[in-house]
Amino acid sequence: MKLRVLGPYGGELPGCFLSGFLLDESVLIDAGTISLVLDQKEQLKIEHVLISHPHLDHIAALPHMAVNVFANDSNPVYIYGLKTTLEALNKHVLNNLIWPDFTKINRPNGKAVFELCKLDEGVEARIGDYLVKPVRMNHPVPTSGFVITRDGSSLAYSGDTGATDEFWEAVSDAPNLRGLVVELSFPNRLQKLAEMTGHLTAEGLRQELKKVRRKLNVPVIAFHIKPEYEKEIRKELKDTGIPQAEVAKTDKVYNF
Image 1 (tube, rainbow, N blue to C red):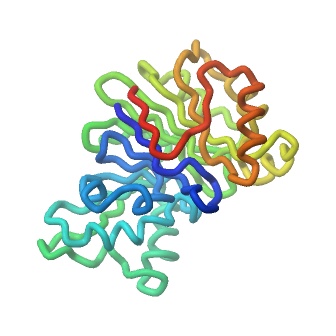
Image 2: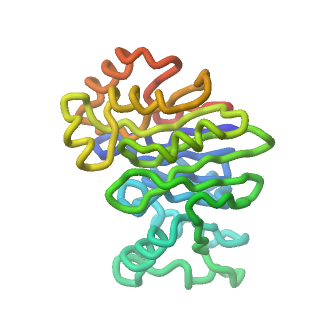
């Protein structure tokens, strides 16, 4: 599996793109950033979008993507998420007030631009060539991480989360785990803020990784960095001594 970082940040400043990852050129994992990194030809290849939760930094680019792929002669782009996520997206964004409802607007070929597809917590779903298991995370709104498996190998993605157990159980049981993409938002000195808002610090991440019941000899890729704390967080992550841990970088590609 090839994973390209479109946006590694949990806040937006010049040069800092919001959370989004492209898997094998056809699957988008969260949609904070699309058009600022992908050209139209690359966007037209996207067939499926996994949304962890409806906070703006994870869905902000979807409305613009809808416009960019409108004329494509293909099936709808399938948007996957928990029921609450899809309801929020339809009610508050694609509502014909903030933005046109592209689940009801058809392309020239008669097919909808977007089709919303519900995922259930803990229930593995077949999405294209992948098996995707949504796992409930610890965040102020219902949020799912994902264990994504293809050809017997898997990738785990946390979405936004504070301390949790379910995700690390899923990571422990994931078949042939090849990579872990996990949020890290705040410096250690803001631990209380991280706990209150459902996020992690470098020390918090170090403690969470102790819950994994397997040798974690895979890349640990931290994302959702608040850009104003980036320098501090990078140093603290290095100081944790977590093997193979690094901060995600825009446009970097990982092969798992």
